[in-house]
Length: 156
Ligand SMILES: [Zn+2]
Image (cartoon, rainbow, N blue to C red; front, side, top):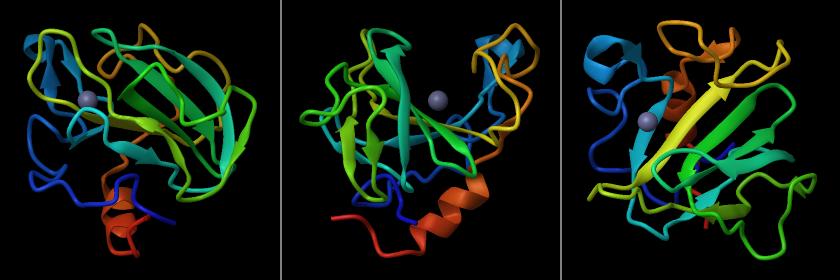
C-alpha cells in the first residue's frame, strides 16, 4: 500500500510536535495522529482501497475525509473542502488514488495531512470526550504503518 503523498516529508512524523501522542493544549490532550507536512494544495492519496464515509469540516477552516479501508479506517485531516474531481461521500477509491488536497489552516503558516488511524472495531464518532486523545476507543498509532508505506513505491 502506498504512502499518502508523492514525497516523504523532510521533517518526518516521529518527533514532537508531529508525532502521535505529542502534547497538545498545554498537555491536556495528546495528538491523535501523525502530521505529514506538505504545502497547501498538495494532492493527498488514498493509502489503500476503500470507501469515503465522511467528509466534513475539521479544524481551523480545513476539512477531514474519512475512508473505510476495510481492515482499518483513516481520517485524512486538514484537507481542503473540495474532494478530488467528482468524488463524493459513498464513493469507492483505489489505493494511490488522489482523494483531495492539503488545506490551509487559518492563521497558521504550516500545512499538513493530519493522519489518524482507527482499527474500525468500534462504531460512533471519531472525536469523543475521552482523555487523553479525545478519540474513539479504537484509535491506533499510525507511525509504524506510515514507516512501512514509506518503504513502498510512492504514488504518482
Ligand atoms: Zn495533527
